[in-house]
Length: 207
Image: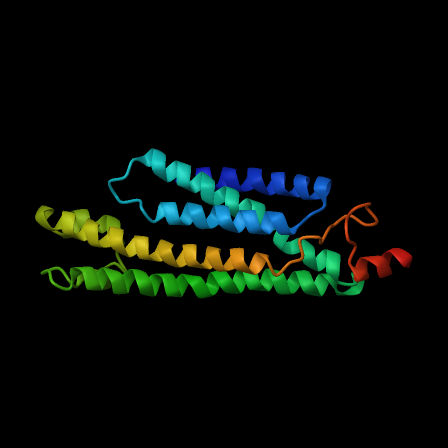
């Protein structure tokens, strides 16, 4: 089920790379990518276990498009603004942020999932399923729990997964706001008429 996301992400990463190379501007791709990503994650949070698969596919394409547009542009400011001897360090720090962000988000998301699941099932006779899911997984409910409990469990699980996507959408909104910290005039092109060239670019050009 991840194929739509992967293909969309790849396609829009290439599109962003070509667009940035042609137009030079970086900030619009960061802002638009974060906005599209937030919209896709927000839309995905409305999905349920009973939702049509076509919705899952469409929302994955939207999420992939947003991530693809932004991830290419996220690495470029370091290459444009920093002196040549510091570019490798700058890119390394950005890549560390990618990895650290993912490592930090996973346990937070897991905590939200289990807490919301426990909360939703607290008033039922199957409250202990939240602990079981840490070792068994949601698919095992069909063989470990009676048929009459499955609808309740799936409803609670839907709520828990939706809460996780709220977290992801929040991160995307934060990324959208952070994108405006990048000058819109920042360009990968040097000495192009009509575009403001940062001082570091001018120094590199003089050398």
